[in-house]
Length: 544
Image (cartoon, rainbow, N blue to C red; front, side, top):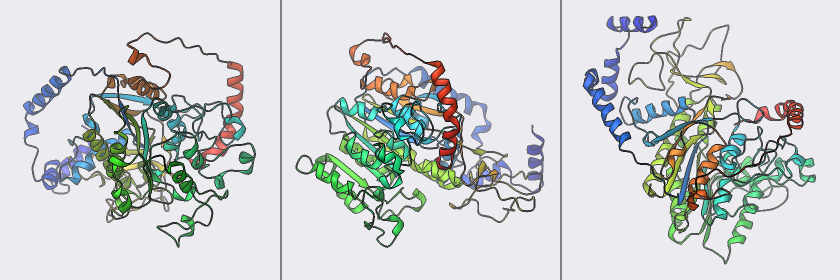
């Protein structure tokens, strides 16, 4: 046994620390007496074993695909959110069963991009949605395109599973807690040498001159998307257009320099053809009847949505509510649907070093997954949950069973100061003064705005590069097992639903199709080497 733990337990007997049993009793109102009996664990394991033995493969063709993406939801975040979810229900938390935990098929996904060991959300989204790995900061293009270089994207565009599903006659939608032009949703419909080209105002003159278009304009042009829910109003309207919710906030006003009002253009495209609605507040959103609605665009904020812990429920619906509305609209199509649901602000909270906020976002995301399962039928709906990349947050120390996941370790550091169970490898929480860490003995580390300490000072916490988890249930969910490259996910999802180029599943074939690949090693190596430094200089400050 580790000496620090032994000291902590010794001190607990002397009254200096609470014991694990005492903390458990205080948290849940009970001591884990049953867990001291070996039969408790044997019986639990036997029940789990039998459920696995009884499991039958679902080899149906998937009518629907529900794809839930937790942006920045690494395994440490997943575990910590599980504990928080239980503790919010007055349980100890560790034994809590998340909705995600009920998925029988689990695998690991490698997240690196073509040019970087640790990726961003643009390169990863292109991989798992378009089936092709690419370079940092680029969206919907192959690795032959260069970050920020418009000319390099021409001829290197790649399409996504959202388009494949639409072309196959399915309804399609995106739901996100970020702006709908952000990296993850954008990869489903846009092609851009830079993820930061949200509107034409964000583009350099050279890119416009070379014929590239902004991401927001591509939302209307590239693929006919049935449901669009998230934020991002200001990228859709001309400069000087007052925001309906924040008319006095200049930063919320429209940004477009080309004088286009994309919201009005979207409405005009639908007029007289279908039943469509554009809404920007919860009242109007709630009034939308899914049974009589063909198209919905709902933009609830000028940019990203508010964090769940700060959301005004009278103005903005939760991710559970937006997920439900989207599914109810899309599922009317007899051919089925593809829906991307992104818990996008998990990542943004982590960038700020705010673990509490990130975990609450993850818990809300898990409730949205539960709603998705409730509204669909497992025999015809493939549901996939995964993260795009991880973060530098870690669970550390030796907290007792049932101790708040947002609390402090009972074992102090060698500088005789406490530290929190959750910490970051880097980020804004690095605050060493005269060689000493801040004393947090009297600090409420459970507060949603608390910034965890970090080992290295950076303005924004970076991503981390370990594999992320993928979970699946429904038709052909057993394809999502093992350790896979991230771009495999798009192809596996497409195969289950017979969309895209590989239709073998609905044709009753299993033999591998012939694929011809030609590689110019000299060209690839030389070009990649000369472009690497440019990518670093252009990209690093904008990773999310």
